[in-house]
Each structure stands twice: as C-alpha cells, then as structure tokens.
Image (cartoon, rainbow, N blue to C red; front, side, top):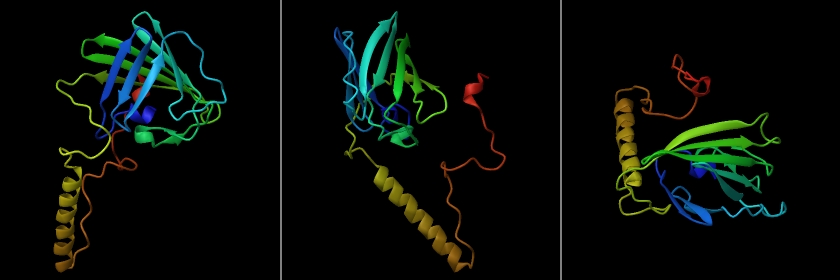
Length: 194
C-alpha cells in the first residue's frame, strides 16, 4: 500500500473522496482504491488477510487517523512495492492533515516487530496539482515512455559503435540514478531534523 503512496517517476496521483461513513483513496500507481470505514467498527478477523490490509479511520480534530492491520506479508515497504519485505504483523498508522487548500501532510508510522527492529515514520506532503488527471495504471495515448527509452538506447548504441570504430572502450551510460551514491557525494540524513 505504501508503494502506491511514495513518490516515484510517474503515476503519483491520488484521488481522496469522503462521505459521512467512509473515506476512499484511489491510487494511480497500481490502480487500487482503499475504502476506509469511519463508523468505529472493528478490524476484520485476524484470519482474514489482504494485500492492502484492513483500514479503519477516525478523526482527531482536523487529522484523519487511519490504522491498517491484517496484511498478508507478501508485499514490501518502498516505492512501487520494492524495498524491505514486511511480515503479516505489519501495522500502519497514517495521519492525513490538511495544512492549506493545496496540501495535505501525510505521516505514517510503520510497526512490524517481526521484520523491523523498531517502528519508523515516513513523512511527505501530498500536493494538489492544477488540471492533473489520474490515469489508470496502463499505457495510454499520451505515454511516450517506450518511445523515449528506445530513442535513448539508439543514441547510446550509436555512441558505442563510434567508440568501437576508434578503438575506444564503450562510453559509460549517463544519468544513472540507481545504486549506491558516488564517492564524495553529499549525503543528507533527512531524519536528523536539520
């Protein structure tokens, strides 16, 4: 479920709607919708497990507090569902607080005594984007990702061929944002409060 919330390179849209009995959050990433009951009913029986868990919400002043349990333990904590695998004992406590008409502060505490040594908290701002349209999680007519990726690969292949013709080693790929930081890169601990 956090894989649909944490920002990635595309598909970050969310649609949050509310009626007196529930809040519904539709995630653009992996196209799922959570219905969070606000009626005070208990969580499902512990034997019933779901990929996105079982959510129950309540209001604390202007903050929507959502506690989610009953996960399967077959997903991970991280963007797009990549990251560290959690167990079925995972409990998420999310806090949604509107800080102005365009922004919601999102704070979630992750508790899982089986998978993690201690609880930890993630915080991000959910911002409203003018004229944003939420798309289903599939290819669509405005998606240029495949064409852009292939055109970039053709440029790299040309650079490799030119280097080979000159007897040089292949050029390194530029723009790699994955993997460990490069030697000497500035590292910022976002949890240090600086």
